[in-house]
Length: 525
Image: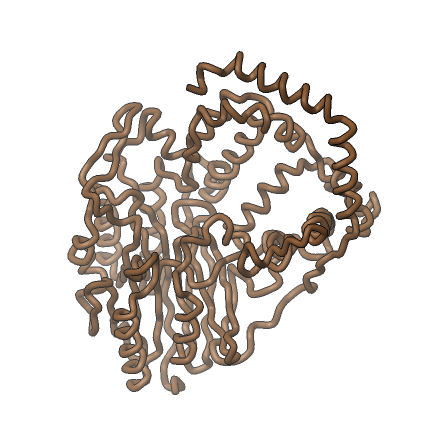
């Protein structure tokens, strides 16, 4: 059907989250806002200017922007990002934009920072966005669904862009209303009738990038995604470019009818890992070649990715360190995550001993506890035995965002982690708790965490996707889930410990509570 269509190259960026310096970049109010986001609000303008220069120099003529062009929908931010996008057009690029939920506030106001306080300023409303970004796609549209602000553009001979705005399905969240999906269906049929290859983009993912993401952001996935995937694949549409999660990921699903669907997610441009996609379409072969490119920018003499990694993951380390040492510092840091200081003062004394243990715990200690499960000798993990568990946990979170987790089943890190998770699985089994009934897509704690260790599927950074045939071959060793029989022993041991030391435990709890009330009683009010 597409044998005569020539290859096409383009770039995809997402979640550029422009933040205007006019909104305020000094004072405690801004510092708190900047601390609680993985994005770099302070250097946002410089990062995005570098990105635009990079895109302008690239050979690809087309740039797709899949939503969340601003941070807080303030009018100054929209003016700033439009100016940047126009600079791309002035240098010969064709720019196509959809907006998303960060780009409007229908309550009329958003916030800016003046000194230590936040103050309200006018915000852009949703019904203003179509006209504001009309020059970035809608003015070229051959078909429009105005209510959803979705549109179709004839990019060139043989290619149609489906820019699908999913900021509301008019029911319970992100997605497409039934009316909008009827329009999408009509456009897909028209494209097929005319022999056009479809390039679709939306904002919210249709597939979770990881079972773990279901815990931290499952509510932000497209609603009715399973149904829409089935409908898309039956109509011959087998992939979607998405954003929103700030993660670099390629996930896939094989439907009950044996048809594959790919969700190609692009990370945020101003937060770790700060990437964009370079994509080559090969319709005659039924394939898409997807690559990853780092945003090229220096911040204070450091590579952007190193700077953003320290900003995001350094914060996690500082919180854990403060939890074990300094409750007032923990209370201060916790506000960046919208946790009230008085709550930390109330419960910090309970968290402190566990955080202290965690901050000092080394991988070698954990390895000894799961020697049987991991099958490792001391010499097998000697090279990592002194590494802190906290640093390893941070690396797993980094893998979640950056994609392509490096700890394959033949590594000591994999075997030790899966060993401790196997013990947890055995405890849950003892009590008849099925993780699958709690979290969709996870059959065990091991299956929940393993994607952070190892990616046995499609490479998130670079892959050639076969749209109509077999999945790309899996590389590397197969996943290795471990069984453990320690559940009963662990539960009995803990129960006996509590019974034997119950008077001491009660005294420690009473003493800790009393001391905490004396030290921080006033701060709890």
